[in-house]
Length: 316
Image (cartoon, rainbow, N blue to C red; front, side, top):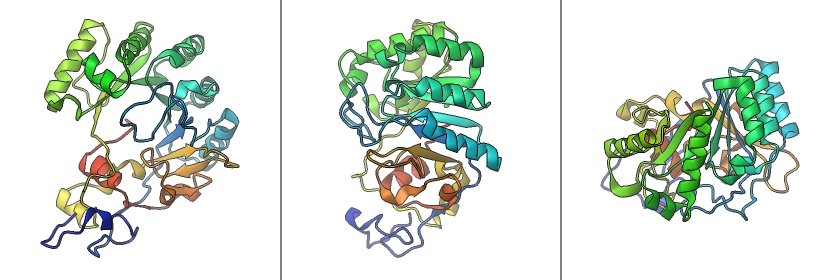
């Protein structure tokens, strides 16, 4: 992170996992304890957003649908090794496009884990209404659905996603809330050019108007994520940054989480360092949770801007 009069070009940064462009020791993050396991259900989505970090769309199947049978060995490994995992998160793409999502949720919840699903709450989710209601009845608040609403203003949300998507997402969120599901919302901090306080106030008005029981001041119930753009010039994170920033590496996602994916054409799933870097091969850590327990060099702009400097985390 330290800068000097001879500042490196952005193109020279994030090349070497061990040292920065200035020759300083790059920061790494050790896995302190695996507490959250993320599952990417596949990159296919029912809509195409303008700035999707994972490039999900109705045509992108770079990450194939993961099956319940493929998830099971990881759940078995957690049990066998007594790993301290408490939560399994499901992301995509749109997870509800994967027809095996209800079976995966049943397996996870049946083993006593909390489950978190990231969804746009549109038609694919409503297609699983009966299965969702059954899971809600059986497992109560162990199941949380986090609905993506980029902004409380429909026009700003729709400009990112597609016309009419705000109304559909809000209807899905209200449907969940009315039926007693535990719901959270994910917004985008940079949208609308407002500060965080104004964003939270706008969402509070929206939730109150529609009877949605979410505390907009709660940073977990309403997560406002910083924008991610790998082309933006950001400082590299050195070992000295922890002291300069007064930040612990244990606070980063990769200190407590990993993600399972199934690449298109691959014989078996792989385990990645985090949810944000699904395509960069240097963040593919192995085929088992044990293999993926090694330290992660912060060798990507997202590591710096989103996690260290932005302070974001995808779980609770």
